[in-house]
Image: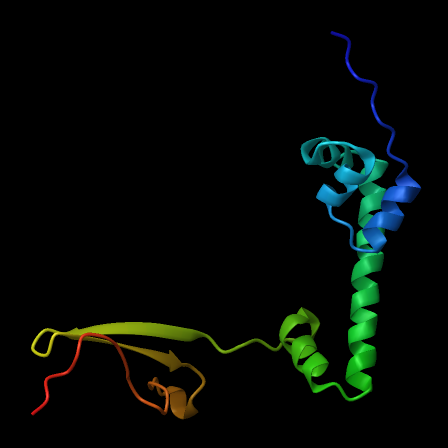
Length: 139
């Protein structure tokens, strides 16, 4: 059986699609190609360069709008930017989960500790301990 002729992918069209955030799966559906075929073809120039340029334009567009929202007073945009843009150097403090078992009362407790307390203290949260399973013996 003869092979089906290759569907041409236009680099300019791919760049426009990437610039609006299209996924490889969506590009495949648009051109009638399997996602794996599109991925393989995007790995080679000139399609690779066109896809990279379009993706960069999409990222810049999103970043620009987030900064506009922050300038307009959106606290949510400001928080998201501060946590997700590495150029600012902010990060969420690490959290660590602990599970402890008390065989005498047949209970399991779980608490989350947060770093960044004064003098490096390692403390459970203010609300204390959360009962996960079992019941404590009443005295």
